[in-house]
Image 1 (cartoon, rainbow, N blue to C red):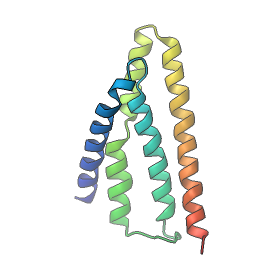
Image 2 (image 1 turned 90 degrees about the vertical axis):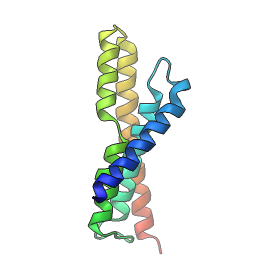
Image 3 (image 1 turned 60 degrees about the vertical axis):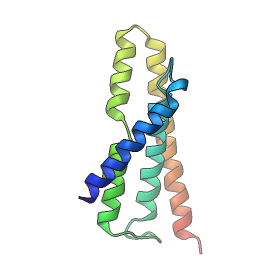
Image 4 (image 1 turned 30 degrees about the horizontal axis):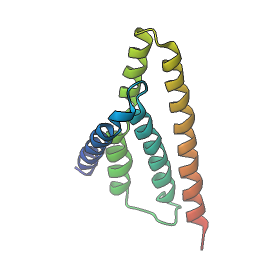
Length: 125
């Protein structure tokens, strides 16, 4: 139930952020890119901060509610994949490549920053 509720929250947040970012997303899907970067940061940050050895350990049900539910409902890899495919199908090879590069590099970077920040918080006094 916690995962389902988290998924509902993540999905609604994704919808509203996508709507909010629509004016910026005419030639590139900036809403999807931003959502995936934020979700990559959030899952790495909270996952690291609340792990069993972490300073702020959470019960597994809350970790699952956030990491599987909220982040699973919030991030949009399937949307990213479809958008890239549509760009390729439309012959926009450069935009498709740019979307892939931006998404992969910045999502991995966001996950690394989230991990690093959580580790710093876990080891601070």
